[in-house]
Amino acid sequence: MSIETIADLVGHAGTRVTEAVYRLQLRPEITKGAEAMNIIFSDNPQQESA
Image (cartoon, rainbow, N blue to C red; front, side, top):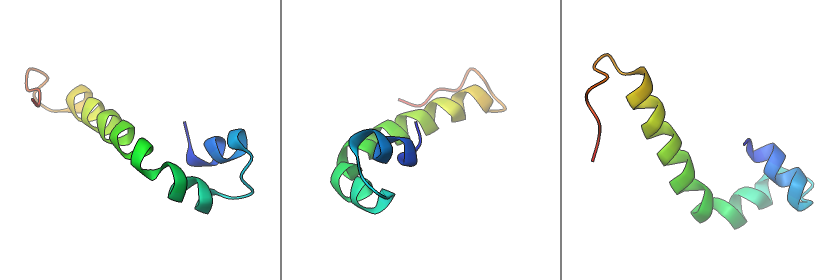
């Protein structure tokens, strides 16, 4: 979900406040998503991070 969508859902006029307020909650989710994409699109699909 984009930061713009989250800002809209919680009623923020822009993304600046959303990022400041939810940064600690969003970062782990973004990291998990990036790690999953690395596994999915890696050259070696058997390789997984711990």
